[in-house]
Length: 263
Length: 264
Image (tube, rainbow over all chains, first blue to last red):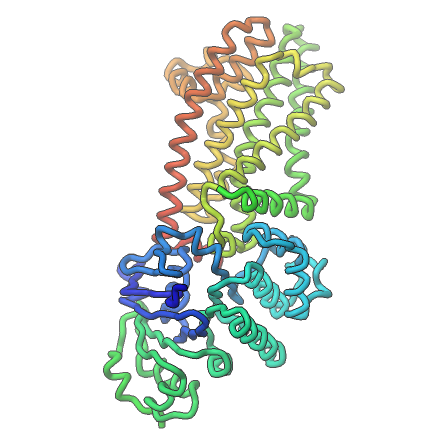
């Protein structure tokens, strides 16, 4: 069985003169939970979009399950799923209808049973006949996660999965994701600004800033390196010492950054 | 191509329409209004000028067939725009749905809507104006298929432009059929057009369809097959070109990161 689930090598994305992603490389192995962190505009979402085949890289390669996303998009995406707090399912469809559509897209067997189980897991079973557009943002986030787990993905890509959830629901969502990872061996690649998500979920962290990977390792390794006991402090340190100007040009180099210690 | 994915996309559009009374109205209201207005105009012309009675068959037949083209075109665009409006593009294009499956689903929806509208308008025309669309006879399927194909091709061109230029290009979904309508010879023969426009009209498959319809209704069936054949050849050419344009624009949207941007 192929152990390297995601392999990103020398990934670049330029939008005109603006370099959104500059020579990014990282990987995720089977069963790992990898956190992709960075301030807004660091290039995380663009990287994820290239990983999912939505945006075409300027240079570099994305290999998922050992195959290139540019040449094997359909085969890869049938084993992957994606959820973001910032995108919605069609607002004028009922919850059950939205999930049924995506269950058919992913060729889920016994879709109704699967949908009911996921609605129970995320505690929105009472909303099955509600119109999606009438859900609160927290309920929509959980609906997106139901959609993302419909096909029992081998790789789940999440963009800030707990962004609009209260602490109680965020904790429940993390538990579901941990269970999916532990029991089904699903590899997770997640972006988050919530350091509790990162601490509780992630086996390894990839810090991005100004389109580059500036740190990579387990949270313990990164905390030791920055002589800190808080990932939030490390995040702030990286954000402030690796700041960018309006067009994304770096003000401080990554070498400068590594000299910074959190007080 | 996987039929489960095509079925899912068709099912999604069905759910959208069944949940939205205004969409259902959009599908049925305008074609019915078209038929009523043109039907009454024709009755009035017959009354005041004693125009030839075949005029009513020409005009009412033209309204029904024009709606086949218009609906086929519009639904191809709308099936994409529904995902644009509901910010669902990211979910669709990060799923295993292939572009060819997306287009096939749009074509199926176009066909379904064109057939539905044609049946409704034909029934209304029979009831209100005693016009029987079946008088076109065995030529009708050939004419229908050609309008369908042209609607698909134009719909694909409009969708490709919307993908590339974004929501500000949405107006094309409604405007393109009316931009080409003068060249389609819907309500008049191509010979009525100025001489310099006639060669352009001869490049539009619908012009052969409507000439064919008029020939068929006036009993000159022998020319209809040739008209349909020319229209079919042009449609094959345009569908291939529209497919290539769509593929190119879709790739451009990926290069420029537009699919994600439209979702923001």
